[in-house]
Length: 442
View 1: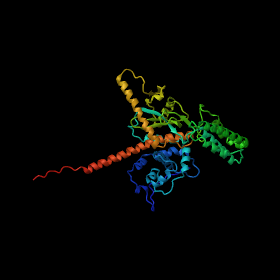
View 2 (view 1 turned 180 degrees about the horizontal axis):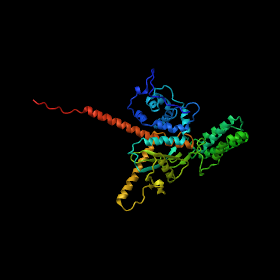
View 3 (view 1 turned 180 degrees about the vertical axis):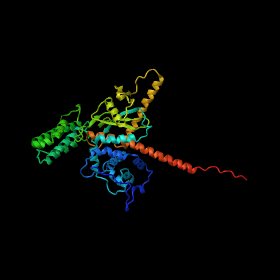
View 4 (view 1 turned 90 degrees about the vertical axis):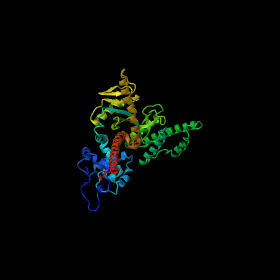
């Protein structure tokens, strides 16, 4: 059942309200007053039933999600900050200063699962609607892709084989199955031989140890399958299938498994000098030029070519903004697409005719595309997209969309701060202004 937000107009005789001691000109207070929380609660009320125990207020949960992404915090780390900061509490709809956690950190996980991808898209649409109409008049959009890295260790065959052995031993312990051998001591000795595996004098020994670990992982997997009862084995069928895929994959295979707990992780090469490969999912961002407002964020499974991501990204922009764009400015990585629907794809090197004016105009548009690169960098470093901690493909989609919404909200905060500074400067100028004294007539 949907819970109600606290009534801010209800006075308490024993404790003061938040509004009595916080600064009403604080950017977070102004931003909280501008957000149409009533509309957001109405949109999210469809995810709740009419029976059962009352839930946490929607404004509280949605506010925690927004603050978590805006300030690059986790589900656990935002709780002490929320208790310490009265402006966080006001943003989430509290009428009085609270001394305890607003909810359990796991409630944020359940709330994300409840609203899903559609719910966080509503938060992104809200962050776009709050921008000024002047900034949203653009009929062009800049599109670029990046990699959202998953929270996994750097994948190697040796690590995967060791994880298989550990998982099999854990399953056997849970189901009271006695295996022929646990291989705990053997795996530890083989792992020691993997140190400095690329050194010429140790390469041969390390390879033999790796092959031995693969043999042990396959042996213990088959031993567990033989000894588990059929009804119990059916529960672990998906896990066993994953183990066999890891054991059968080789260097040049496609669709390889890089992590047992995140099997949908992909290996993506973006041509970076400092990081040749990144392990995660490809994300496409759409941004309005000059204003730097994110109007689209789509996460893709696997590693599709950039030109294959354009249609889904433009559809998402239309879904968020409610309008189609005339031009989409991209880089040379999107080669092969010229038109998608009514949107023209502009990339460097496109023929524009013999007119010097058209060439200069096209060159200026293509140069403006570089503005999305620092925006993606800020989204990764400031809005919790540098490393994705949410599970599965749905977690990739939710984290990317929330990061885009957080970037838009941070832009609104900067505008509010600039307006406050300008108002203070005008006030100070008026105080310092002293008119010339009127000459006295004698």
